[in-house]
Image (cartoon, rainbow, N blue to C red):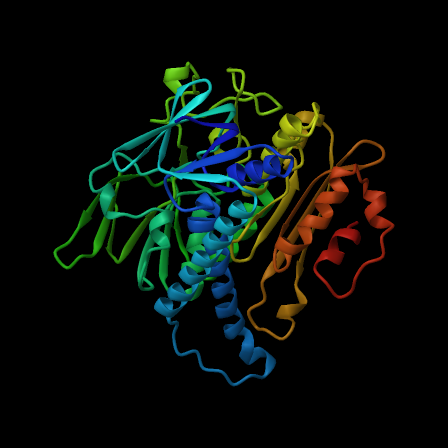
Length: 452
């Protein structure tokens, strides 16, 4: 017998599950097809375990500062294996919570690989058994995966997925990449005691972020002991008889005696082998599925959300886009769609970064004339420390009323303060609105309402 549903969701990551649950809340009969663990990248090998690791690194930083505040504490090392067991148990509990929530919403889960056979049917393959299910609507939310380069010896390295499988803290690590995942992993490992080298294909990292952020972060990471090699391309990777890794660059520079190599050079959408060619759904040269502002693909009745669309690859974006789609399809909200402008984001680097809106470069290109308000300050947490770390804030405004079009912060508290200021920008705040707000003292966020 064929199973028939109102909505078939291919992929049980953040976007897929959010869409499914919102649709089910309006009475839709929903099924999800997933070959891996519930929760996708974010829950299993992304945001959630990453934040656990960042918290561990932040605690290590706190222990270093403890003596400045009068504590007689000796740091005796870090039990990585104990942390991993507890972290893995936490993720397993989250997997169980996802399962229970889907069960409570009467959402059917098909465990296996899903493949489109036409515009209204998906074939589920599990252990050589096949099942055909039908749906009035089909959502593709299969996410992405880390890229590994096609060079000799690349298999000796691991990706961010493999980072969460490490059983011990590596002594010497090379992180190759220049995006936010690279700086996050490098920062965590450095703070926990690894000797870290970053290799960048160009001179700088975080090229898509405001210059003030990457300049300040690079300065802090260098001060923290991270070795950063710019304009360096890897030609091959070798492993010695004792198991250590050697990275050879295109100019024959060698970095030897490494315990671990992490590839953090980007992610690729999971759009292969899911039957897109069967239904005539084309992808871009990078493998992304193009959608319109309502998440419609070029084929009626088939939609896409999340990383496979190539638009703002962030978990909350996938969730929000999916929920809007469910509102449109099953709650009579024909205009429901996600506004992709002014999406805030955080990089869990050391120190953390919070950002929303345009960079200074983007604003100048779009508006021409802009006004930039910028400040560097030392967070009061370092008041008693001899190793003071500088924080940086930049606000970009346009027009006579100085409408705020971008805010970029790096330093302690940047991750938590950005959500509220993102609301202000979304509402069209001008600098006078921030100037007229009484500061909360002493905090890092008060710097944004005291900028002159």
